[in-house]
Length: 276
Ligand SMILES: [Zn+2]
Image (cartoon, rainbow, N blue to C red; front, side, top):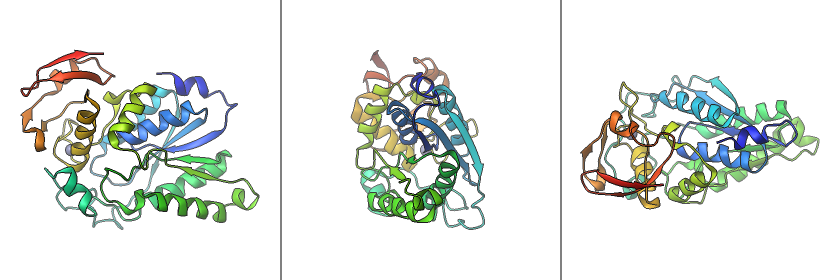
């Protein structure tokens, strides 16, 4: 996909895009590029267990021809309470309904506030007036900093707290998918040509980098692909949940058309008739 490269000509408006390397943020990056912004992708190494996502973010940004900055912010001292950082187990095999019912152990205290603050600082330096996030509140876990009211509040803060804002250069925080079902985000991304084989969502990947298929992030991702009638192109160590447990392996996944989600008619045993 070359949308980003085509738009990245220095003539369009600049935007900073938070990029975790997952489905939603990768789609947000493609969306912002398609909207005509010259994008600057921003990823954080904050002490997360699933550091694999940083590699995914780099791959996604490279695939779109977009400048990518990885910032180190070590949250391990302040956010031990999060299962993504501390020693708590990663919740597994929870239904989407269970996932949405509470603020989960994977909540990282104030993470989006911290990330957006850094994005705001970089935006001011770049002369960017727009910040994009792929956060979504509908079928995502109940993170308080993924809600529309949070992003509206942060936008108000951004315009109060910066030289650019004081000088009348209004800053905007875009969360284009905040009220969209994850399957809708996926369909939008497919239309934009996002290469989901490059993305990584799992909170607890194997040593080889395979998604576990059982954590909340995997469950919501797999549900989105199922709801969209698509097959997830990434490799899983296992997939489970309401769909039943089945073993998959990297070789089988890699035999798919790499770089694309493909529509499938899939049997219970995982065999599939694919059609683009
Ligand atoms: Zn997982």
